Length: 179
Ligand SMILES: CC(C)(COP(=O)(O)OP(=O)(O)OC[C@H]1O[C@@H](n2cnc3c(N)ncnc32)[C@H](O)[C@@H]1OP(=O)(O)O)[C@@H](O)C(=O)NCCC(=O)NCCS
Image 1 (cartoon, protein in one colour):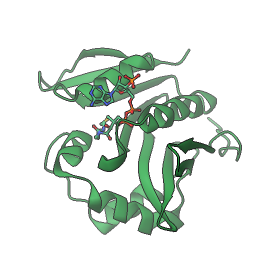
Image 2 (spheres, rainbow, N blue to C red; image 1 turned 135 degrees about the vertical axis):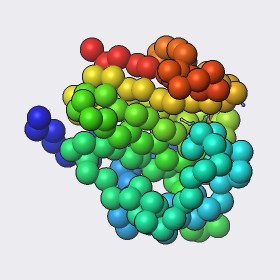
Image 3 (cartoon, rainbow, N blue to C red; image 1 turned 45 degrees about the horizontal axis):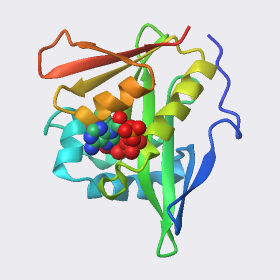
């Protein structure tokens, strides 16, 4: 399957946030490694736990580098940033990764603790869905802790159905078909 690289217009956006900030979104690049590293290291234990479904994942330099080196023909990662005291700061990342069937992708969204609950996650995930559709993805799935009400509500509000997970009652699977 031939899938084109993302067009510059479709995957970038910016909007004002409150009186003094604006949020910019664009596909992540390898040069964003420092932004990504700082973002990941500042996440609270709870946010990390929710994102990685438990305490087990170690955010090693190799993993963080992998997070910034995206093969856009298969996968996608959008980074949201803002300027804090004159310095670009990452405040959110949304990504999908293609599973072995070639048509299903797993999604994940993470918003920095201080920036949660301000509509950024919803916009990032909406952009990711548009991008998935444009890249021929037929189904998005997400693995979400059953206790993660914010993510379950967010996914539901964007059309995902929330179902049981084959691996146990601590998890839910959210699914969005893209016909
Ligand atoms: C879940 C997460 C991505 C949501 O992003 P966010 O920017 O905080 O959410 P938004 O402000 O865009 O809110 C979008 C919707 O999510 C739901 N939501 C967000 N925060 C919520 C909260 N604290 N309680 C209940 N629902 C909440 C609401 O339905 C909201 O819609 P509304 O504003 O119309 O009511 C973010 O909180 C996060 O990064 N959490 C930790 C990591 C994580 O759990 N990732 C998901 C793993 S797949």
